[in-house]
Image (cartoon, rainbow, N blue to C red; front, side, top):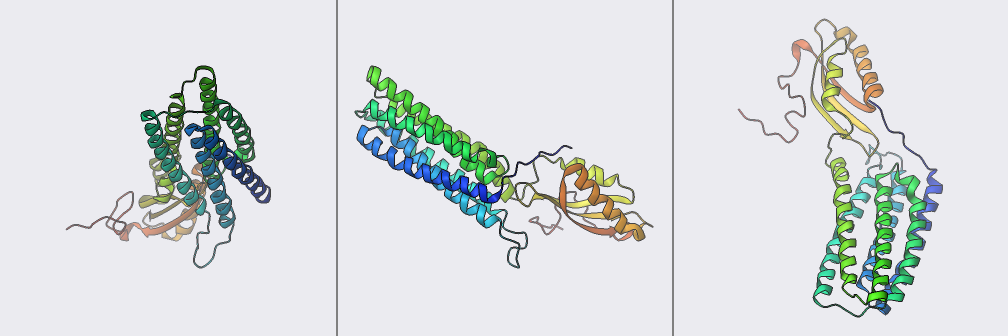
Length: 311
């Protein structure tokens, strides 16, 4: 099984990029809010609100990057890497709330269209688009290797598309005085935000729920382990992700009868196979001799892991 290559950016250089992105987004948010109030455009204010969420998402991402680099300690024996996953969950949840709010506001504007100044919309949205492109460029490389930064990056991509839509709306208002385009564009921005967020939040929740890594075929792993010389069975397997990039497995391994003296060598072969073929570097293997293997042969999980024992 092949494994993706992660693109790493120097942490300090990455921090500077994120900080720069925060600064330009905060400045843009202020400009958009002022422009939205002056023009009366809900779409521009919607874009400003989304842009403000970009800045907040970048602040969260920035803090998470700092925390994630802390060394392991007695309280966090796995380290702090998963804080970036938590940050991504916060960012996507925020996007969903914003999307729902914008849908509500768009519905209100459909019922009561407002006068809108097209030129202000076009100018401010044009500036916003330029800033969104710059921000996306600052975070693009880092987004390839971090679910946390990817969440912030997608905030910006959505906002850039929103700015394009707002420019389009402003042009239609200037040309045809079509005021309903403002809530229509707002609803489209909201719909895209919601679609994007619900699509991306699933893998984040999967990590936090200790789901098995989606790129690893668990049955193939079990089949490979069973085929290793000296192994007669594997059960109570738990596949999970320590963070976005590190898969883990703990399992019970049944050593063939008469091979107990080779148990350590068998374990080493299992670990090597898991690492080489599936990229699973973190493994905890409980060895059992065939004669005294535990009664519960459940392939996945096992009693004591949320299952009720009957009988």
